[in-house]
Image 1 (cartoon, rainbow over the protein chains, first blue to last red):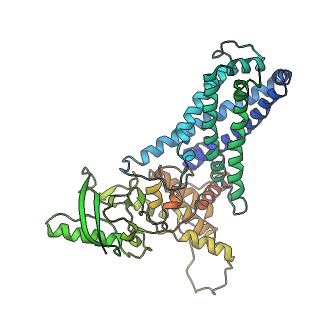
Image 2: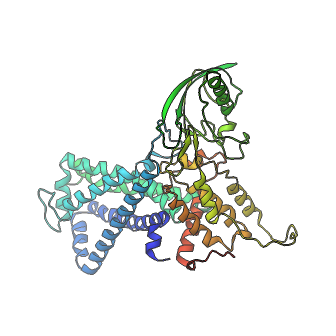
Image 3: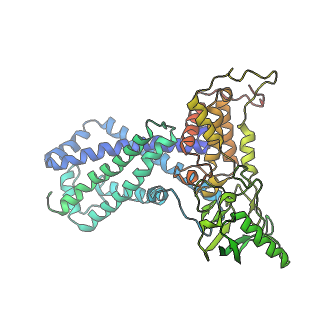
Length: 217
Length: 260
């Protein structure tokens, strides 16, 4: 089937969301692991940042892949949300959810919040415009100076709560959309999604919290 | 024991007319009445007063035809799990309770009158591919085609779908995924369903999209609303079949409508 027809189908768009979701989950796993280098010491994380620059092809390859993934994920989600809204033109006067989780019901607005956070995060720690004392390729300095401000750390903590919720439903939903379903794996896919949704955001918030508590300075 | 309910019912004289909620006081009901019997009693009283009765769909009243279906206090088919509206009884409500009754709401289910909606969109999804093609002829021996017991059981679970549309009604996206997926799983699990398996999923999904049903966000409201408790596992199966047919299936020849 040509991609146009595939993309034209609601399931096709969902598959695109699932596949780009795998790319993004894979990336944040690498990201959170690298972040924890900050607890090893300034030289570990600064050295890691410098080492990324030694392979510009890889660096830009990953950046392009991520950008394409985010764009496809957001475009598909937006189109599907518009279709879904049109599918119920008259709202129920009373509607009581029976089975859905708060995580699954907040995917759309939670996703918008994460997208806004992503823009802020890149301006903050990658390009530096949103940082008052940014030094290129000095992540230890950039991170510790930023998170000493309580409300900056607060933005990150709130964003990681949103990320946890998005991952809790999104990671599980990915299996469902790709048809990875079998009585032998169904419990494991729920466990996997829960572990990702808890471990990744915890790893991320450990840094601003450590800075706020004075463990990193 | 007599019961008293305070109803708020959606009244809409016709497809294009504006609808509104009308309050009806319903005293002297029995807790052993089914929900539809309660509406019958209310309707008889309305007719005696010279008012138009509340239109609602019903047929077998034993939970197997899929005709009835109402949104009752914000829950498709009401508060009893795994039960169609006709099998719901007033003992599931409190004496004096307010009960809001709405039709299924979806662009693909236009209101015909009051609580009756047009669900022929589901029929068109079936017509698009929810069948098998079998040659006529002598009756084959009963066990000529072997079916594993597990597959037969799973196919039977999916075939329990009565097409009531509660999955669409309960889905925040008004998606018919559980309905289409149940039909696809029912046929796709059996040997007789194999020849058209790839075409079936592509055509039924395409028809579902054309009927203006929404997409599935895997949130699970449908399986909770389903009077037959069909699991969203069948939706994963439909996605798998769709993916396989899209990636590996042969393109359909333009203008070909022949099967088999």
